[in-house]
Amino acid sequence: MTVTGLPFDDFRVLLRDLPGPNTAALVAARDRDRTLTKPPGALGRLEEIAMWLAAWSGRPPAVTRPLVAIFAGNHGVTKHGITPFPSSVTQQMVENFAAGGAAINQICVTHDLGLKIFDLALDYPTGDITCEPALSERDCAATMAFGMEAIAGGTDLLCIGEMGIGNTTIAAAINLALYGGEAEEWVGPGTGSEGDVMVRKIAAVKQAVEFHREHLSDPLEVLRRLGGREIAAMAGAILAARMEKIPVLIDGYVATAAAAILKAANPTALDHCLIAHVSAEPGHLRSIERLGKTPLLALGMRLGEGTGAALAAGIVKAAAACHSGMATFAQAGVSNKSDG
Image 1: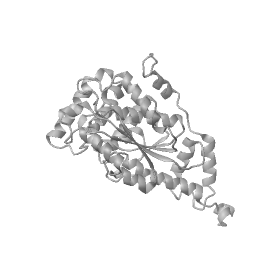
Image 2: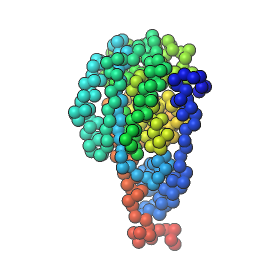
Image 3: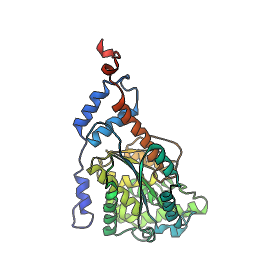
Image 4: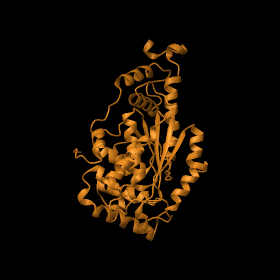
């Protein structure tokens, strides 16, 4: 993480000097939790989530302006036939999001979540990672900066999601570069890859990591060489949320790959984040374990588009409501065992 005067330098400084949790808010939340009309720990992870909200927002647990941010990008590696769908589907799905016709729209309506869609130069796919970097350092840094703008306008819970034909190939390559192992351990079906398509997908991941292997000791180089615009933008959004004291829910395999870049750069970089769910992509649980996280949900989903994070947002909202809305023993006139 050395400073060189190059476009990544600002991000290296931010990653080096990340703000920590607000201990005063955490202590206050713990003190209130002990007075609520329930046995200690009876709400399980809901109590942990409430404490997490307090620590990383710096205030009593609350979710009043939740936001799902979906970043869409296209990838040059799709020219190798690594997915059964054409890249044009990315744009078509972005239009579907805008029209309210996707799964994410229904979940956002159900849980009263805001939704923003970011179209990241879909007419200009990234470089083919099997033989060239996905992005230049300048373009990657600019895309990270663009992702940081996702929180403009305000939010107090950021749900990170994505859309991009071919991007589970990208996620697999990032994980292989960061954690090693075999490509087969990280490559899954994505949007339905099987047979010869799966063979080509595995081969592309192997070739990409081998081609860039001399440059993969730096996480930001992993990002620009093997990533994509939606990956870079999600990394930027997660980083911006940390700087602005906004807790984050990370969606599926691709979003987790973006988060893994930050964790590799600074082991504390994801302390303000929760993994929303473990998807059906076989590499996702392996990646989550490397991050030292426990997902909130396991529903066998692998859709992307922020759906798992949006569902988990309902749980986080409930955790905050229980903490703030429950009566204390004194208010309810209920005897607490500590009262004797």
